[in-house]
Image 1 (cartoon, rainbow, N blue to C red):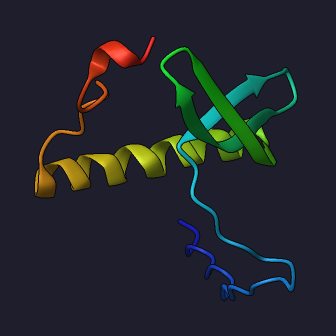
Image 2 (image 1 turned 30 degrees about the vertical axis):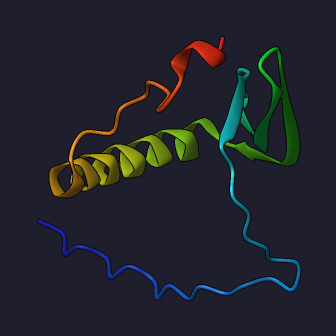
Length: 98
């Protein structure tokens, strides 16, 4: 039996161009080599018109996409056990969103 190797020390750093934004729209494209997440904000301008302004695209390897799926799944489960079920139906006047 071999001893488990000690994991390397992890240091988190913030790059000079780091920024945080709010996204209520995430689009996904997948290829053999990667996943592409496109983040944006959705604005309903009229009952008939919705505008999505994309501001950031992020490429992930398939392995990193699966790791993100696992982290999101775990955190959504914890959130729902604390605050209740997250519903995907629009709140308010659902007839306005098509």
